[in-house]
Length: 191
Image 1 (cartoon, rainbow, N blue to C red):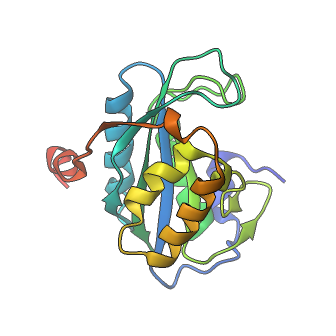
Image 2 (tube, rainbow, N blue to C red):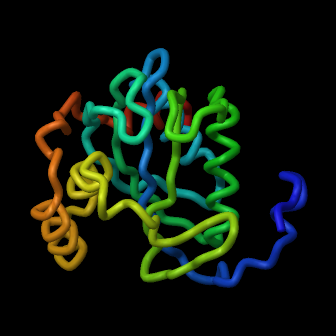
């Protein structure tokens, strides 16, 4: 069942919101000023009162996957700490996409910004709206390479990422674009 946006918050979340959780969010952009869209999305994530951005990866430039007739992407991964349940965090992410001009016309097509909830602690969730862990993240170098940056200090996760990257082709198409200073983004927004 798909609910209108204004009713999604009323849907009970199968995972309670009592505890702070660490979530990994993949971000991508291939339209307009790609880096600014990523910066704006990170800033908007952190403006939610129950979401703290704790780490981000560098930004990587990557070839498109799926629909190839489009520009190259900039991709990164952010780690947030939150008390929001997964469905509410996902809803916040979709609001950010909409606010930054995301238009969904072609599956895997061009976009101003895309936010995907990759992992949320050890939670496993499979609903019509959201699947955690993200079902294709282990197959995508454009997710795993920046995720490796963001997972510093998490040896088990780093080992899992390394194992999947070893089996993936196309890693050479993921090139570092720039370091990302998310603290300066949050300072400019006054948070």
